[in-house]
Amino acid sequence: MAELQVEIVAADHFVWSGAAKLVKARSVDGEIGVLPGHVPMLSVLASGDLEIAPVSEARFTVQIDGGFFSVDSDRVVIVADNAVIGTAA
Image 1 (cartoon, helix red, strand yellow):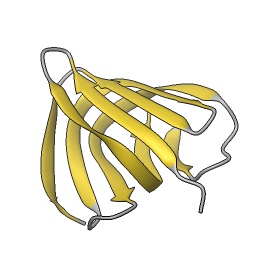
Image 2 (image 1 turned 30 degrees about the vertical axis):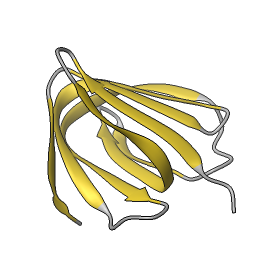
Image 3 (image 1 turned 135 degrees about the horizontal axis):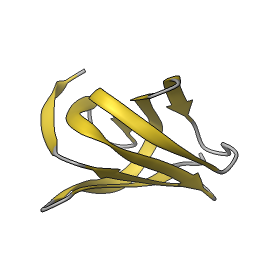
Image 4 (image 1 turned 90 degrees about the vertical axis):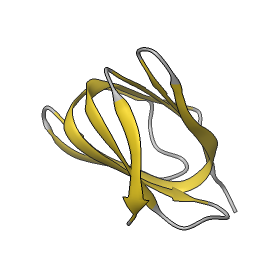
């Protein structure tokens, strides 16, 4: 099964990294859903929740205060102004 390699960092700390099946976020232009094989993209994130579906764990959310979202070759990098891991989704 294909998977995404996800890395989430905030301006002043590391948040989470790992393999995931799905990443959902809110950009300034609307909702983004990324599955393995997604085309490369770069987007500005709005404040709100990211949803991560890890390969071997329960889904969870990360509250962010804006930032950037990059996808390239099944690698997702999220650089947030501030980010805090929330509850299971």
